[in-house]
Length: 105
Image 1 (cartoon, rainbow, N blue to C red):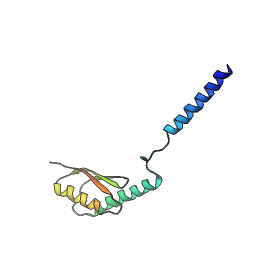
Image 2: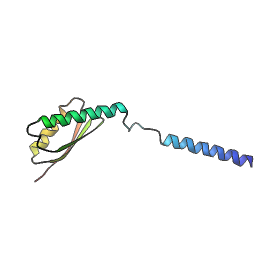
Image 3: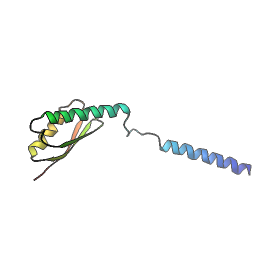
Image 4: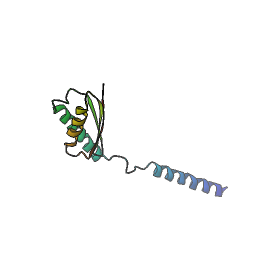
């Protein structure tokens, strides 16, 4: 009986350790500093787009993850798509731009 109790105790301890290891953070998650940096980049890109006389009339969504900016929304011309991408690339800290803007017809 004592052997079963000891085995059960080791088994529970092993399962707890396995659970903690499985829930540990990975390199894919953002740290607090990265989140703040991405928020700053997002704000700067939104400001740059709003400051552009041609682009300010469009509702362009901006999201940033680890310096990669994603633009989304609808615009009325390919010129607007190109200009929004170029404007986003000029902001400091932007590593690359995923331009998912759609031209509505």
